[in-house]
Image 1: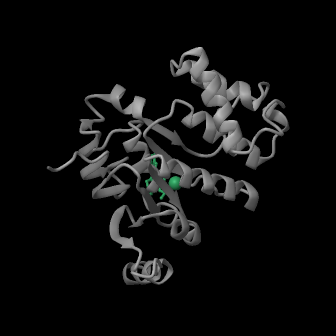
Image 2: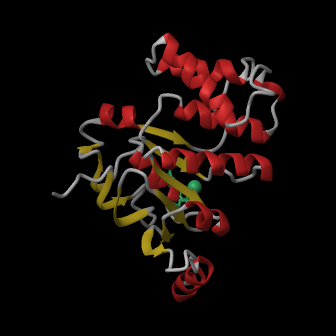
Length: 244
Ligand SMILES: Nc1ncnc2c1ncn2[C@@H]1O[C@H](COP(=O)(O)OP(=O)(O)O)[C@@H](O)[C@H]1O
Ligand SMILES: [Mg+2]
């Protein structure tokens, strides 16, 4: 029996304006539970646009985005419940609240019961190694602390699908490692994780496969070879050089 993919994009194109080329053209892929799928591409390749469409924040110009078999355009509430997304780092945190209060506030907004909100907030603080600063005001945080708080906040409702747009860009090594470990942990719990990056080593470490985007097109899907290695850097150079 064929199972429904958790995420499926069918011939998805997104045009922001008639005067510029589409941000994403005829994109097709599917992904299932327990997978970490990477998206590699230079600035402007279409990574964020793709993730925003899957999150239901913007609509495709044509084609379909399905989450658990539901069209995100027609059943947006289905998408909201199952997706947790982190875009653009720590925007939208409340500076005057502590990290813990920020996370807890979003847990309440997402309709978690008081005991669940309390439990999920504590779990994330522990998992993201935030104990030493979680009760200080966000205004005093480093960028790595803010990013971890933003990640916890985005995922506090325990979504089955995690969309992480460049989650480690600009982070120090320690915070980046904590975020990477977090991704691996969520994968082992059967979540589907889509992660964009222009850090090739990071994608090679984390991902089961990597979608290479260039000029809004899916140019290649890279898998590990039998030794577990990717050749992402070479592949990527070939793709970029062949198209300019
Ligand atoms: N809101 C928007 N309005 C107009 N153009 C946009 C908008 N968002 C993205 N684009 C354009 O779409 C293309 C893909 O951008 P984006 O998805 O942000 O790429 P990436 O995340 O890979 O850097 C770029 O050419 C970008 O300028
Ligand atoms: Mg982007």
